[in-house]
Image 1 (cartoon, one colour):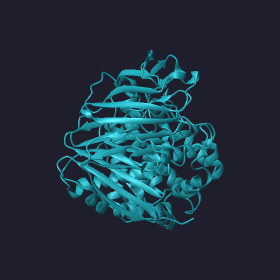
Image 2 (cartoon, one colour):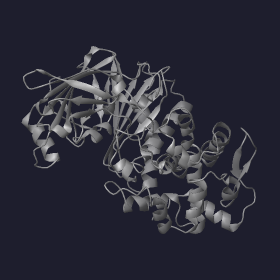
Image 3 (cartoon, rainbow, N blue to C red):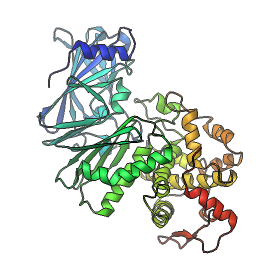
Image 4 (cartoon, one colour):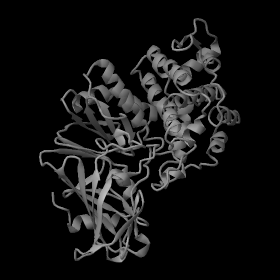
Length: 511
C-alpha cells in the first residue's frame, strides 16, 4: 500500500486538532519483508522543535498493568533530514532515542521485533498486548511499534500498512483512502488492528453497531459462530447498562493452538482484543469465550468511562499504579458475571458455582490473602511476586464488588445496588471528567452511606477477611464446605427481609 498523502486526509486530521499549525505523524508500516520483523518509516509532516528531541517508546500501556519496555524490541533506529542525510541519534535509555539537530528531522526509520516470538529475560509481554506477524495474519498493538516525540503525544497520526492484498483488516480506527487515522498516540494505542485471513460478522444491539473479526489458524472458530454465542450476552449487557455508552464496538479474535505465552484479552474504548488457544468449539469452550468477552465489553464503563486522572492523562514513560484497580478490574469482573445471571443467560446455580464459590476457592487457596486490593494495585507493575499476585484482582476484586453490592442493597432497602451506583457514576463523571485518586472513596461515600467508608477501609485499603457468610446470608444464601470444596447455595428457610433483598439482588432495576 502507498503512504497516504491526499489533501483530504490532511484536512481531516488537521481539523481534528483545530486550525493550529499541526504536526502530523505519518507512519508507513511494512509487513512484507520479514515474518519476525516490522519495518517502520515515520515521516514528520510539519515542524519539530528542540523540545521534541526525545523520541519515546512505551514503558507500559493503559489496562496492561505490566512493565513492557518496548524499546527492547527496537533496532536500527535512524533519523534523516529532508534531503535524506542521516542525523546523529543516541540511545540514552531503553525506551528513548535522543535526536541531534531536531529541527531538521523529517524521517525516522527503525525495525521492530514482534513480541510473540521474541524471547526476553524479564518482563514478558502478555500476548494480547503484543504483536504477531505470520504468513497469514498480523496482530498489531500500536504501542509495540509506534513511539512519539516528547511534547507531541497529542499529534495526529496516519498509518499506512503494506501487507498481502488478500488480507482483511479489523479495527475501531477509521480507515480513509488507504490509511488508518488516529487522533493522537493515545488513540492509536487504544485501537488494536487485526489483519489476515479473517472471517467477519456484525449486528446492531440497542443502536450500537457490533463488528467481529476472527483469525483462527485451523478454521475451528469463525465470527458468525462467535456472534451467535455472544448475542444473549450483548443483550444482557445492554439491559444491565440501560443504554450502551458507545455507538460502535469491535471484537478482534486471534485463535492459535498452543500459544507461546500468557493468553487473555485486553479492553479498549471501542474495541477489545482476544488472544486465545484454538480449541474445538464445544459448548463449554464457547461459554468461556463469551464469559471473557462479557468482562472486556463491560470495560466500556470502567475504566474507559469512569477512571482517575492517571488513566485520563496516561504516562507511557513511567508506570504509575492507580488505587482504583479494585474498580477497573474487580467491579468489571463482578458485573460481567452478574449481568449474565440477571439477563437470564445463566441460571442461579451456575452463577453461584462459578462467579462466587470458585472465586472464593481461588482467592483463599491460590493467592496470598494478606495482600489487600490496594497492595495488588500498588505492586501491579512490579515483576516477581507483584506479577504473580496481580491475578487475584479478578477473584478477590470481584468478590469484594459482590459484597459491596449486597451492602448497598441492604442500606437502601433494595433500591440501590452496585449497578445503580455505577450508572450514577457514569452520569456524574464519564469521559473527560476523571475521578480523583485521592478523594474518590469519599466521593462515593457522599453519594451513598457513611457505612461504605468502613467497607472500603476494611476490604479495599486493608486485608480484612472477607465476610462471605455474613453478607450472603442477608440475601438468603449460604456458604458450606472448605478448601477446594466450597459451595454457595440458597438457604432452605428464609425470612421476609432475606426474600425481599434476594429479589432486589436478582433483578436489573431501572433508576
